[in-house]
Length: 255
Image (cartoon, rainbow, N blue to C red; front, top):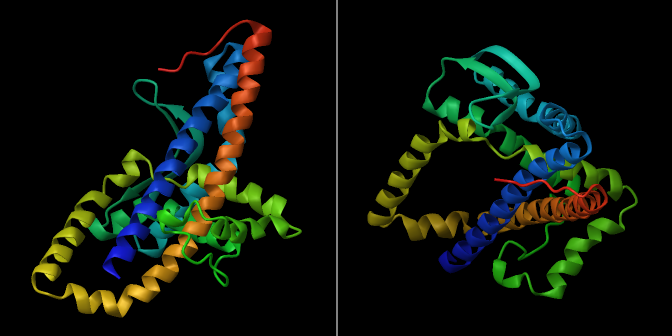
């Protein structure tokens, strides 16, 4: 069981890293395409925002809703791009006042949690999870992929696939969102190490192991569809950018 859990954790981590990288790449190259056409950085930022606006709104709404549920007051709700120091562009913000370490951590991670739940529901994996898909060692198995691809046999898959892509591009926590989470994760890590030293690990794993394995497969199905959607969009943007560069005779350099 511990070995299985480790391989599932590796698989989910790889999927999240891929998803985060693709989301950043798409945001940058949306701006690049608009800049090729207009030569205006402000318009490029506005274009990126307009394409991703529904996802940005959901991101900020998740912060606001969780803050309200936890009784933490909010003083501002903004969904509009704003240039920060350097070249950073902030797509939106929710300002909170007060709150303890746990509540601030939950508010910061709220877009990821809400987005993940929506990805699971949109993918339909809650009732029929793709078994074993979270284990990275199974990713070369056609049986796993054929099960995942059943999603595209459903009649309403286009709009659901679009929603999965839109949500997944904006659900990852920003650097500011991750800040309050660090001390909480450190405390959890210390408690986990203490439990292992006291010999509580094996009984705990036997009790929760099957549930964790089942849930990890549900997460893998949701994240894989998001990765596939973002990969398709990234390839389309790359083709468009290369064609525009060839036609216009200019190219965007990304630092």
